[in-house]
Amino acid sequence: MDWPQLRDEIITTTARVSDLLRALPDGDLSLSRVSWSAAELGAHLVSLPRRYRRMAQTPQPFPASVSAENHRELAAVAERDPGALADLLEVEVAALLEAFGEDGEQPAWYFTVTHTVAGIGAILLSELLLHGLDLARACQRSWPITRAQALACLRGILPAIVLTVDTDAAPKAAGTYHLHLRGGEDWTVRVHEGAVSVERGRPRQVDLHFSVDPVVFLLNAYGLISPARAMLSGGMISWGRRPWLVVRFSRLFAET
Image 1 (cartoon, rainbow, N blue to C red):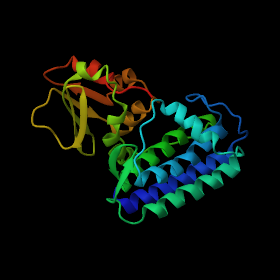
Image 2: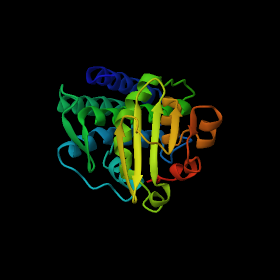
Image 3: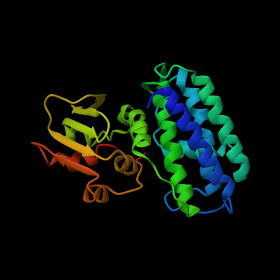
């Protein structure tokens, strides 16, 4: 999915999320996966394009608690009417895409990670898709996520996962990991002396291989399905010369 296609996907998914917000029977509706109400989740989504516009040109420290930062930023969005939030979301996403322009490879910051405009767009798409799923479940509506969408999201997310490394777990997970996204590309995750790097491509020497269904992997990364379910379904398969690293790798990235 190139940048023009990704832009179209973001616009389409924004419209789908906005339709869900407008269809809510009550903004105070509880959600099963997050502690926010449906209206608060809408405010969170409105806050994200604003955040990405601010940080794109100027790096910002990664917060000690993403949860606390999210609460602070959604509190700055005063609106709680679902229909009004839907309108705001469409305006903010459009403003972000206009600011990002036509060149998806233009450098941009994601906190302290050097990324691209397309990469930040992919992270936004993941937020729209997965929080859209939260809303759809509350409204008892279907919310399919395609492999193409998941692959696009992961291309944005994977370079940024270094921000969430658990510094206590990293020394125990030293090794080279090969991550194959079915229907997509290969990625290399290296853990050395407590530092983690992520890059596209397959490593020459591998301690542990992962073959993953992109949709399953994306849902697992955001806590919508458990690692056990992902493994048992065949959505995540691992093998290699150091199989015990599976458990250590699963603990490498901390919940923030």
